[in-house]
Length: 320
Length: 320
Image (cartoon, rainbow over all chains, first blue to last red; front, side, top):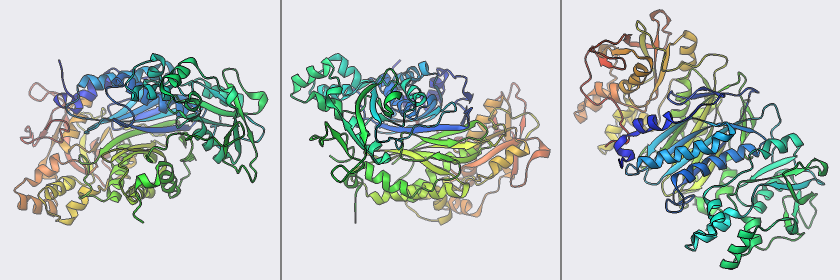
């Protein structure tokens, strides 16, 4: 059975895929109607969306469909955690070539499902259309459970900056893969599938985080978003950033700088937040501090050990 | 100023585009953070998503960016109306070539905004990535305002079938455009931009519609969804379907069948619903009736004047 997407047809494939979706307690109307209906007990829905394009965000020869599904879910669910929310549900828009094996779609769906299921996330709807390149669009929803959302704009001078989750692993994996290697396995796996510290989002919110952000563009770039939105200056202490052994190994093998993986690598979906010093909860590592801007360091500036960082600060996306 | 998407860069373009978005009363946190937060006063969020791909759902030489924006918004907002919901907000994922004029993105955003604004819809977030072909992914949200959602599964024998909105216009426009013509202008415009009867969704729900569906695949195909979900048989009376003059003109010029535009044409985003005979509200035209299935006509069957319809029943999407 090497059935293709085109052979089965849109409706048949949608039916086959959605049959496997388990619907959680938050789902009032699941897939199969014009729209889904999801419960939002506190009357405030948290919403985020991301688009992944084949060749740009993943390659079929580097990542399995299952990994693409996990990654597409992860980067959205991580954005919800960064607001202090508990993820509840998601919808997926899928563009696929007619000649693609239908198994690819089933595996993608399984990855989406497996990433969300431990968090209680249901896949409540979607769309499937024909496309030359594979397109995966995920929009995910979360509940604040009565808490206030943690924005990027709340960092205050005197706050400490702390991270939860991994930094630089996915970037080191990308460096390895682009050079034609498949090891160290830990960083290659990290490129294929992030491990966001979802539970730390609500924990940080409850602890009183003043600002929070998902690290998807790179630590310095995403701290720049907090510094700009909060009109403060942020300094990162490089000595506080652990350089894990696999990153050292990749740096040694490639001639790249291990610290730059940590400071500028995206796609691990760590969380970075600011707290009053007494509020930093367990599970978070303090890596820097927040200060007022001045003439030398205007608001929005991010420094490393008090100095501007010499390298690129993160993904520039469209610029090449 | 012939600036391209790649020249401005992702962050700059997102900032420029979102600056023009007006945020309505339902928006608690708008664009610019990790996620948006939207109020859902009755605690139930209605959610729908659609993916449009250049070359498949629109062509740059047939539709302006503004029209693509209106159409992308319309087909999602119409799905919300088909649940009986009032649309409140949407997010948009956009894949664009680096060489695309940034003006195209601004015009798309203007179209999205203009389609939703009369309904009070705010654009609360999005994503923008690089892509060879243009990809527009819209996910839209609505409020039931305390009403129950109108599903596809509630049609009962003895109900009448009624429609609100136009049928066959977009299909006639497509027939004209594929033959290299640009008139009649009314049907070409209808292909570029549907005019869904949004307000009739909540009106039908309040009137007691037993089932409702957005006509996006074609009347017979979408009635098939209601017939299957409700386990009933639906008969359409062709004499009850008005054939508008522009459709007759296209049929005469192309040799196609005007009634087939009405029965099988998609993309006008009319609404079709079932009601107890006394409940059909003003603004709706009765076109058929609901009956029990039997051995000759098993549940899920849709007939025209009591007979199976000879032509194709609607878009088959992946099959070609």
